[in-house]
Length: 425
Image (tube, rainbow, N blue to C red; front, side):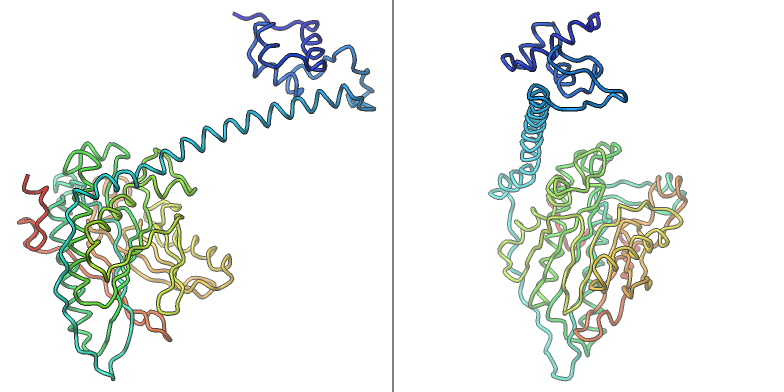
């Protein structure tokens, strides 16, 4: 065990620091102490009551009456060492962050030569009557958790879910969206479709989900979900002049154990990887555009209206879902001085809309699965699997909303239109 420094040794160390002929590392070696300990002495974090011989005595109260040159040197030496330490720490942090930031892009770059692009779909255009109402169609896509397995025994029969069922529900979502928007609303003309991806497409690797997932590892799940999304986007693109896909990450896909709220979170998330692989699949379909915001939230402009997008995981889920979501929403509108018209969120697995203070409307999306063991046992919640679509008018904003119920009686047979190769292996 290292013996404590004596007062005389501390006085000598401070004297050596004043002389500035030895580095802190060299002084530490001289006294068999760490450089960090010498730095603490130099900055008076410790042994502040012991002074070198050149320093004047302190006046009552412990304050120094005048700073001579030696004292100034001592203080400056400590500051320089601290700044040097902080600089080196930041360099290491930036280097580590750069490596992590590059992970998703590097994976996508390496996968690009082997990911098979989707063929261009045959365009299906609805005749545009001059009397029709022109709007932008919006589809919310979130909380898919496509790789998760839920057995009926775990949730008392409320849900049976796995990747083939998720794929079949995706087929239903696309088919019903097209049927309602293009056929039931025959007097509407939707030239543009905006898909707001709000994250949690996968259950990710947190809480051990990857080991219990359908394909058994996170990156196999990513590949399968990306191809599923590509099929969806491709089929939808045949019916619209433009399809815009916006990606906001969720909390389940994070590569870190804890939440991160910095720019590091976006590239270090499976949701980003999934959507970028889907982008590679869709590279030959020229009317699909992908948008990858750099932050956890994003204000997106749709037909002249501002939509504040975020996954919602800054607030915990539970039986007070909407009250928590409303509290967050009520702080967003004043921050943007009323320039946010709609706040769109996933995470809560609860579809609905409510007016919040400040004049904005909070819109929440549902989920692909009704419940899982955690939601059922811990917070006693289950809902109807659904995703939301709505129309945005240039003058009236959101004019209508429809939750598309995606559970179907034949889903136990798996997909009918989307042939995912990994399901055949």
